[in-house]
Length: 134
Image (tube, rainbow, N blue to C red; front, top):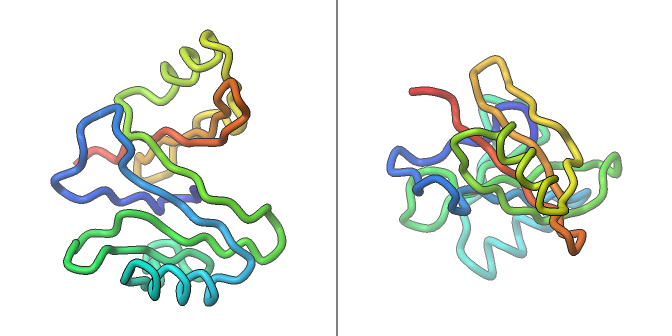
């Protein structure tokens, strides 16, 4: 997850549910072709983040549900899910208490989006976020 790229739909899922995904790749055109062909996903550049991040919408779904981050070799290719939570810092503390690790501590963007990257006890990466206030 980068900057202010998470934009959950107005009918966003309830807290503590998966509400966003990100695919990071050094071959974004190939990812768009693959996932578009496989699942019919629509991919458009994210107008709020500039080049390097695309928004993914499901056919007939309207609002974006995820994103494709252009890694350009600067970061590892990845696929990660994000859980919508009410308090990012509290979830980070709970994750550590339960044996997980905080990879990237909570960040709050200028528009109010808060997010963090964590590892579960098995080493699986995931993220948590709280969207900006409406």
